[in-house]
Amino acid sequence: MVEQATPLAMWQRNLDLVTDALDGAGIDYFCVRHKNDLHSAVAVPLARKGEALRALQQLTQQPQVTVRLTNGEGKHASAKQRTAVVQVFNAVSDPDSVTVLGSEFACEVEFWQVTTPTDRPITEIVAPRGNQVASSLPAQGQAVAVPASRLTRLAPERGEPGRYRSRAEFAGLGYEHITFPIDAVYTWVDGNDTDWMQRKNLALLDQQPGSEISDVAANASRYVSRDELRYSLRSLVAFLPWIRMIYLVTDDQVPPWLDVTHPMIKVVPHRDIFGDTGRLPSFNSHAIESRLHRISGLSEHFIYINDDMFFGRPLLPTKFFHANGLAKFFPSPAQLDVGPATIYDAPVTAAGKNNRRHIQERFGRTITQKMRHVPYPLRKSVLEDIERELTDEVLATAEHQFRHPADLSIPSSLQHYWSYLSGKAAPGSIAYSYADLGHPSAPIQLARLLTRRDRDAFCLNDTDSAEVSLPQQHAMLSEFLSAYFPFRAPFELPAHLEVERARQTASALAAASLPLDPTDLIRRGSGSSQASIFTNGREPVQ
Image (cartoon, rainbow, N blue to C red; front, side, top):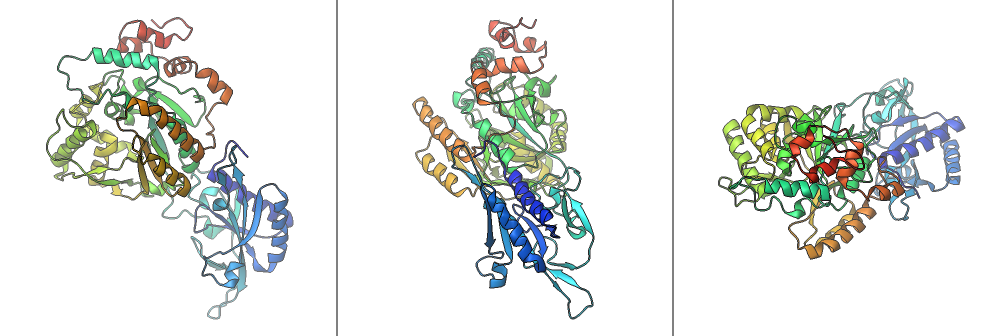
């Protein structure tokens, strides 16, 4: 039982078990690029099969290590194929002994046979099954050391030195390998934070008479936090290990469990991306999203994620981007309402209609479909292009403190159509589920997700539920998320520190741990409610 484990770590653990055992027995081998990126494979001469089996069998003396013969090509494989592959894996479970990472990330040992083809005078070695490169090779070849990224696209390509013994034929980068960095960006708010609530209420009182704020823009359900961020980040760390950097965009808030000093994640205050644009504090996701491309250090290719989105299984970077740099987007079968945006439209509908007008004017094409509410692959250069072409509309969106009928929904919709029609994106497919936590069918949907684990991504959202149902929703969600994602992320603080920090608001934690801009108080306005945000036992910022 372990507190931290990921599929890629288990992939490496299983491959290391095998290569160390073969090295210790003095048996020649080379690593192969398995057809399935979740498995590793090692080729051993058939003539040394007996020695290899004895060496591998010694691994079963270690706790939770399994060594077994497996059907290498499926149930219709020949008897020879069924005994040609040995599977080795170390199974681990979470502290509750429920979730197990095991055979799906196994290392498989293949026994290659030496042959001499009748049509050419060259001795070859032939695999008992196919792989991603070649199932037969010259018997004599160049040995090379390769990094994990040459053996599985699940591992990030970061120019690391070679670690695993292989052949030159398996050392090259395929056309499908992604070598550019990909970052992740989250936007997050803790709507339970009393300091943040004061900022929101003051902003509402400060709205000018006649302001066209959407009727549902200030609903509490839009900002409620049920600790989804913790588990969404766990899903990212586990299933997208090739992500370079995680940026968490917040209104000067930090969750109590987050180690803000960890090099894998960076908290980005709204003031850093709004700069001299927009109006702070902002409670408008459209406005905040319009500034994401201004994150310092953000890579050209990144994935934008809401905290109600979760990754359901290990995914390759090609799920979101083509290796030539094109982004993918995921259209929804749901259609966008006709007509212009009005104050009576839901905020997402109004923004979609505004997007449609600009796509029509810019490209002469008509948007009819919405986008799926899934993680969004984005290109920073396209977002910059949109702001350059639609400067007034983008900056007006940034100015709206609450959702407004004139908003654009840029990273969730406009960017994808703009990118596609600019030749920088192509449609993709994603296995996706959506569950409305306020719907009676939610428990059944969650049970199905937990049992099958066959979704690339899923969203657990809440429509405007009655307050009486919120505690039940929270309990249901907490049970599901802790069962699906039990392994802690490396940037989660120890439980005792989290308990201690949870006594403070998310705003107070940010004030104690993040650099402060002395002018931010002026931007927020005067008053004791704002000043309290920045004190946390210290002198108020003047």
